[in-house]
Amino acid sequence: MSTSVQVVWFKRDLRCVDHAALAAAAEAGPVLALYVIEPNYWQLSDTSNRQWMFVRDALVDLQQQLAALGGQLWLAHGHVLEALSELHQVLPQFVLHSHQEHGNLWTFKRDQAVGRFCRGHQLTWHEYPQFGVVRPVQRRVGSFHEHWFDWMQQAQQTLPEHIAFVPPAWLESTSLRPLAIELLPTNLGTDAYLLRSRQQGGRREGLALLESFLTRRSERYRGSISSPLTAVSSCSRLSPYLAYGCLSLKEIVQATESSRAKTVPIHWRKSLADFSQRLWWHCYFIQRFESNHRMEFQALVPATDKLPRPFDAERFAAWQHGRTGWPMVDACMRYLHVHGWINFRMRAMLVSAATYSLSLPWRPVAEWLAQLFVDYEPGIHFPQVQMQSGHAGNSILRIYNPVMQAQKLDPQGQFVRRWVPELRSIDAMWLFEPWLMPVHLKQQQGIDYPLPLVDFEQAHRQLKNDVSQLRKEHNLRPARGFNERRSRTGSRSRNPPPPDSQLSLFD
Image 1 (cartoon, rainbow, N blue to C red):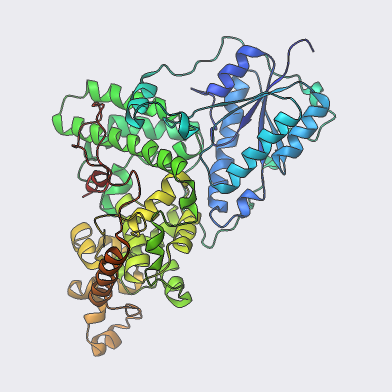
Image 2 (image 1 turned 60 degrees about the vertical axis):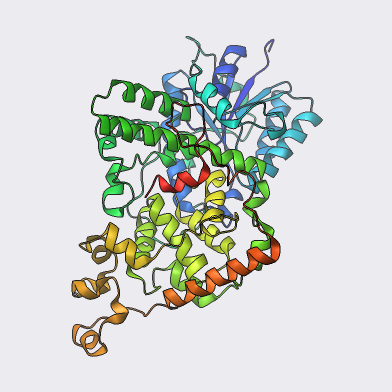
């Protein structure tokens, strides 16, 4: 072989369009498209089988994309180093290409091991940015916002007219196999609940959602994404397709801006502007995760760990399984069990209920929610949980009152009655506060629903007192990057919005 084989290692970038690693490899020589099924990853405390099943769909779709280009996806099973070692024996001078992965500590250490392997065997590994995020952080020049803005305006990656793929005969002596549906397991991870209504993975599904959002659903985006009743159709629902790279962030940003430029109604243009801003926030939090990687395991402001939040197994189990006694909290958790997704406002309320109201530690809360979210993105998930639980040293405590949230976002009780069937027949005056219902009426109507584990008002008076005392004792300041103060601007401006406004966008 006169030309080195170009191995494209697909990870959380399961597409062929705007794929920098594939485009570069295709220009350089014969391409081997590789995906490694890593069982150890899917057994982590923040991953789940519902996420794997989405990836499984996406891999089948990716195989179809590669087939249209004249190639195929090759599968390995186990640790990626085993696959690379095997390839090195039959293809001694291969070149490795992949996107940078902004994952959890496990994937980071895995990638470090791959780097050591490549250096030890004198192999070249090219990594390409997938988001508007700079790695390593120390090399960043200028503001993150300037970088993001410039990167998103760059042209998308294109493939050459002809791609030479590795002949199957070259890999006959290896354990690699061309993707076939029977080679993709259906039970790699754990899942405490049957996911009955999961989004299907793959680029085809993602493109259909993007089209429906930009041409129809985004008109109601502004003002409709906080309520779980309207969010399911008004939110873009693109988050899992971004998390696993079925669509590229750049193509979504550019398609959104193109639609915005063509849209006539002012309210619709404002909705698209809000959505564009949230795409900026997507990378902003991942960039913060790159800068503060310890936030996966440690509080951003260490002194906040002194808040009295001992692990209480009874409280945690009640919150996990939707039995807190607060109907709106329980409805949201049960919805999440079944769908693997819920809107941002309700995610924030779930974290608030666990860490503020029930005084639970943030880490097990973060892990449980990560397992449930099909769209789990570590670089967004951990900063958000830390912000919503007060461990970023926020100047504002975002305490969500579940009664007020229900009254505002589910005024007729449709969502609560659907997901907390124990309360389906209860009178409207008691629906959001069933603990106030007289005992004899509960008995008459056969209401079997738990009382709240704590008194909401009392718990939060104590919380505010604890936080106030902690701030005085430790002179607390928000974590770097979480309290920048600048004027809020539209998505086209090169001036970034302040982090606090990220939450206000959902009010």
